[in-house]
Image (cartoon, rainbow, N blue to C red; front, side):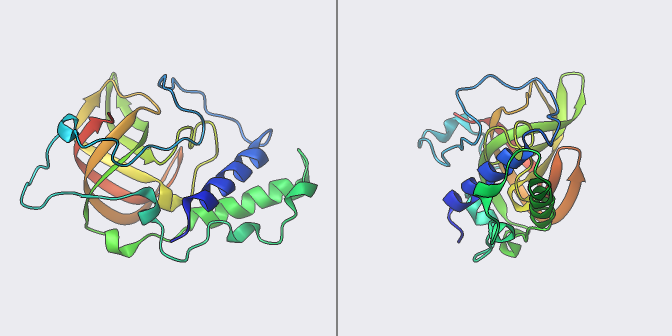
Length: 208
């Protein structure tokens, strides 16, 4: 498994390259005590009464980490090998080329096939997509604060496209949520990034 620290370094590099090159999509972002790049702890406590119980207790959800969504031996930093980062400056054509190169590679990031059809439980930050009034029926779940909003999208295998049968009221961009449901492999393009997974949520609850 690729250490998350390596993925964090690549996220920081992409953010640096993006300065001055990308237009940030301004949205109402949830107020929170998080900085760009911060992640959630998978199990902050055992008081999971804050999270709705499984729809089918006979087949409980398996709690997974975001690292588990990346296949073993996949290296998100591979597109950057041989690139002399200390020589790149703002506006350097090589920086733009590097950004395009890694963006293409991350859009094609491989998924973990063993998760296809799995009943999972995972925490993350939300990015509402389909909203009617105050109700959201479709959103992206991402692993760290600011993804797709303050920084370019992470690899597609680090973005989950979530749909719910009953719209959720009051959901804001970068709200923290536990999502329980059935995971499916399959990429989908959205205006905020390409998701490598799709999840039909059975329960969505605030992260506590």
